[in-house]
Amino acid sequence: MNQPSFTPTQARLNDALTQLFTDSECWGGYFRMEATPGEVRYDARGHHQSGKDIVVYPFTLPQQALLQTLLRQYADETPGGIGFLTIQVDLRRPLFAYHSTTVAEEAQGAAAEAAARAQHNQQHRKHLRQTLSPAPYGPALAAQVAEALAQGHWFNYGHPAYCGMGFDLVDGRFRYGRVWEGGLEPERVFVDKNDFTAWLAQQSDLSLALLESEDPLLWHNQTVTRARLLELVGKATTL
Image (cartoon, rainbow, N blue to C red; front, side, top):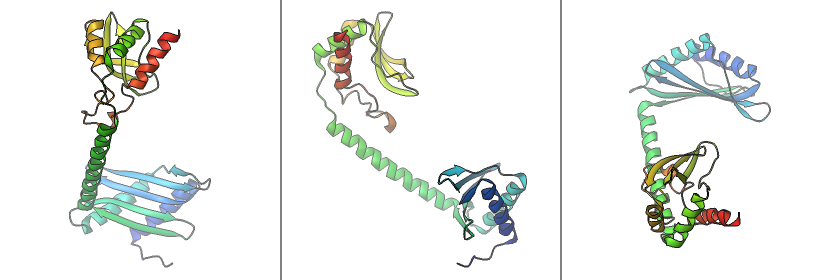
């Protein structure tokens, strides 16, 4: 395969990228750059000899100067400005393939991606609303949950980062809220046991699935469910 002709700047950059990937023990990969106000962002991934893809670095000052020169050349030739410049590298052939996108193309791509994501989220929320149970937990289960909490049991997960929604009992007050790494951040505090059980008895897997949230990551993600409540009650009754 015949290589296209390169500008002097591209030829020097090809040599620099050859050295960069060779020093990283990679036979190829890609180098991507984006011109933003005040800086140029770089992202390089290499196909390592081990079969894994790795981050390739560092970018020396001479390499950065070459990249900035190249970006300016592309920007001058691109109406509306350049979005990204990507260089695909294959040292086995060798091959250096330059591909640029305009700011308008990047904006169109981002808009299309956002629209697709919004449609997916809408369908996902609709599916959850159709499949999650709307049946209230009822007063019997609510009273059992309150008793389990009164015995010192916590209703939460305790893994790193976000742990969903939970209950606890602190200073005589039942609390409901988000849990982070085992610690509950109350969003609702109940004045007494009767207040808590009356509220919980009316709730369901559907009502507590956080589907009203604008963040799809919260929907039915470690939320309160009948199965979790029964698990809590089961632990309390077996001790």
